[in-house]
Image (cartoon, rainbow, N blue to C red; front, top):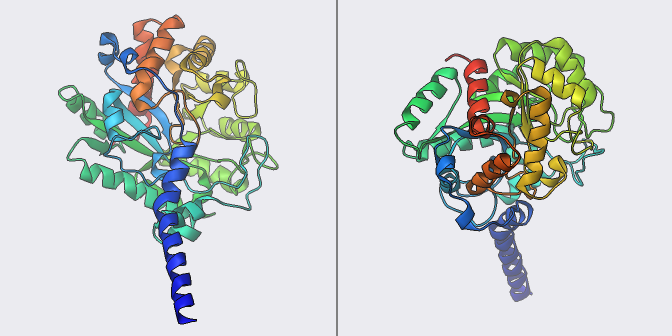
Length: 386
């Protein structure tokens, strides 16, 4: 019997070791797929002259992946940012995802991120609290900066961004990032937590993710209602703190309510447009126009559901549609890198996006704006001053 028990414990131990060692990486590799492209097509002399290449949405912090190592899977790491000449990436914090997520209708009663946190052997507090796991991911980005030997910075203000832009003129390998939240549910129904996340470096908040929460209705929720009373208080408090509102995943009613409540510019960090790809995920012409009129910014995605296509030309078509409707200075890249989806390219493949924009008829100056200039200028206007 004793030998049998020892054998059982040995088998269980081996199984647990295999689970914690291989399961998180397997999930990352199997979910964050990218298109294939020949390296010979990636280099263009004019692409390398673009001064500021940037993207509005990446979920890298969700994954237990070495930021400083070049990977053959997933979408973003420091070497691939540098290979793609990226100056800036917005890193968003995913703290709750329901089982069986889809773009039509999801309850808020289940959560897969707690299990992922457990599998990655993160702090036990992150297994049970969306706030704890969100703050853990925020700390992770700051740790990347601390370990980068000056090659990566976390941006929280206009002043820091101006300094970074100046410094990068003499070193094109310098990179930077900013923190955002994908869903205000991690505030855990407490307005005072807004300051906690501000102190952690968060500068934009997506009000909802794939489910309705106590602040607002999601485009993919069960009721798809608008701002709650608490959500309206949150918008006012974000306004007073110069925190940027992100309407990605928001219900149509939530978008209407936010537009009625605040006059500040807003972003939609990762989306598509119904005029090209008509589904529950994407923005209507009405909302595009309203966001454009207040000098907002719309990030167009690099995945199939957003643009109804599987290559960079599909993204370029959606960018053309949005630019023609609201102006080329209101459109940006919102890749959804590392969002447990397949994207057309990874960070190293961004030159192919520039090529597709050129084929779509944009001139070099317009491509510079779309590929990052618009994000730079928006943040220089709308981040806290210092």
